[in-house]
Image 1 (spheres, helix red, strand yellow):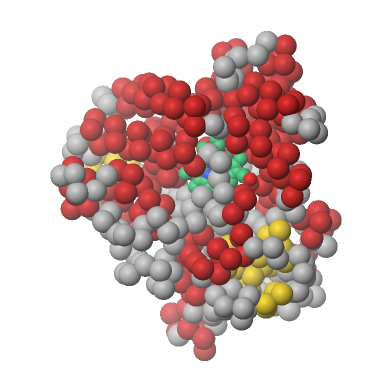
Image 2 (cartoon, protein in one colour; image 1 turned 60 degrees about the horizontal axis):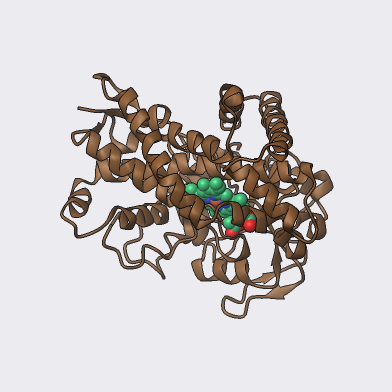
Length: 438
Ligand code: HEM
């Protein structure tokens, strides 16, 4: 998850943005698309001195519903219009299958290679996608989410007990938000007690955005190794866990998944289900801690924690974009009249679509009573819609409710403006959240 931010030319948007653009050193890299026309924008991701993903989205919106932008290692049409994003994600002209539809795949590098080069549910379509996704959906069934309820409560209670004595500043991300989803995923997968510490260390390494590429590769190999071992073990002695469910559902399908394919789907679950939920917990808590009146509406029963979560997901989604989609043929969207060329890269800017002024009044305001809060793409749309959404929603509501009950006087130790976001155009959450508990 490398560096990010966005930019527009001075003539197009005024001097403030022009200043930013000069600072960003626009257009000095075209990645694998050398020779392609240069784009007016470079999506880079949030940095302390730069723009947040949401601000990048606002600048892009001034250029149209789907302007071209540079990404680290490539370029894409970045979709900021909510309705256009819905039509593209669920329509017949766009695919996530890079192997079929992206001629640049063999030359892809860095973050784009990592996100498009894998063979899992996220990067497949049609029968391939059904084959990969069906066992995941079965394993993340309503029953499993319900049975996880008491376990999530226990994990949250342990994490709260560990921080409760602290009288100095606590980083809510490390002390709490990170701990809950990591432990939920470990229990969900049924990681054996003996491998628990090794798995958690390796999994935590996957989210260390400051790690060097070889360290990241090592963490990846370590997690894959442990997952492979677990698939073998659970085949021998099945348990009441997601790996066993996944194996059974995969074996029952017409074209059974190999152990390597099963391991890759598990890896997707570990990646998709951890950092996302960490940010969802942290961001909702920041919104509620910095908007006491909104919090009071929940205490008074005028709104629920579920309402607050949807509003938080709309305003600052934990994932700002999930690379990449591709045009499967030349086509023009009849409503927006935007044309796309076959093979063109498409990136849905989830953070921008949640603030589309044609969908939401005063989109920058955090309003738990907003009637349009649920019109967001935080969990995607179409056949790739996040199968972990019910579990994630459950985890976040329990974690945030219990935190606020345990620490009713908790407050941010810095102003909201001083919080910094992780430097990524993909991941969209706070690096750390210093708070005082009492
Ligand atoms: C707040 C937390 C979460 C957020 C914001 C989130 C968001 C997303 C998004 C945006 C996508 C891509 C959808 C698209 O391309 O249209 C996705 C896919 C996916 N997510 Fe989540 N996710 C979260 C939690 C989870 C959890 C807890 C799990 C599993 C335990 C999970 C598993 C997956 C999987 C397997 C996919 C790929 C589905 C497919 O391509 O068919 N996610 N998620």
